[in-house]
Length: 492
Image 1 (tube, rainbow, N blue to C red):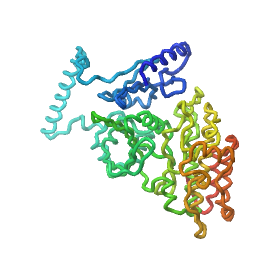
Image 2: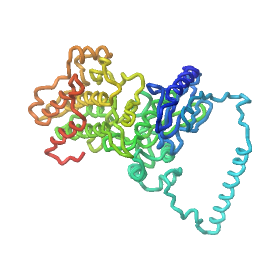
Image 3: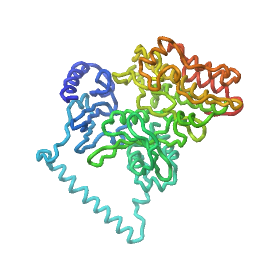
Image 4: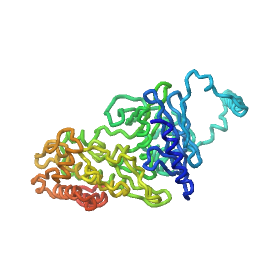
């Protein structure tokens, strides 16, 4: 896209909104529906080299993302990012430096020259003091101070020698803060200490690797630089205040790695060796108790995602928009965690706005709700997207219950609508079956012989109503399934 186009759009938006009162800073946003966003943090501007051409991206950065400045200052021959702090200050077009161009050589003013001279001198003095203290066998007073400021970058050695697991480290550094995740400089320190071992999957925007950090396995989702928007979006969603939950994949870190010729964008999360629910059900049958545990954990995770928490440190309502068995991971405990939030949307209850891109028909076609297939979803209402998630949840439950073994009897694993559409159905294929013919996956009669499976079948039907407003809510589904836990004391 030509940079001039964005400049014209930005000028028009400034003229339209400059007289409106607002509590936040207004910024140009190329990924927003109205090309405008508001934030208490900063306006974000970036340019990258893609296929030999410069590609521009403008958006908002929230205050908690500004702590470590990971998303702001960055400059190389193929990538440049900046943050600014006045209304529409990102309404300028950045350009990458020309290699070999004499005019791109920085001019050293008096202030920069002073910084270049003073900082090395101070470092040399500090090194001399530390050396003298060491030679005298004394412990420097500086080393006696315990530094607990989580905004300071931690060394690899201090993190690894702390003796704490990642889970404990995340708990310690998030419970006293906003609950949105590790400080960004700590994220960078962790990410740059990870050793990649093997590829464990490929997603829509890149590869997923198993890595090791301080003896622990982690999952590393690697995006290429051309998918910077997707990486930024997923990292932003995962770091939403109070999103962390036992049944939502645990986010650890986001970092970019630039070696001068190409850039990798990392998103680090917890690693679960069983893989996705899709992989697990292909290889394993499940007992009735196992079905209840898995289903209850999925419903709990989705209910938390959908829930809005009111307060100063509140959580917005979030809709997943791509819920399916491949985006749900099975934990060692036999419960699940919902993953892949890159397509999720958040609802701002103050402005009653949903940060959704212009193309709202996204997700996996086989799991799309009727209103999405018909292009009749009301995109200005977060409840519409929640109801579409519930429809997809009913299909996931159908996949799960089919693999339940009762007295040795179970069905083979199949995807929803396997007997009605091709293996890679188009939107038109799905629309004919789901909207025109109003068909749904078959619920076998033998499920009626087991109370738990009978209730699960009833839940599925109430998730698949053509009228989204008639479908169950995530919280209602969670409560109904929790009442099936008769044989075990489940705490989910």
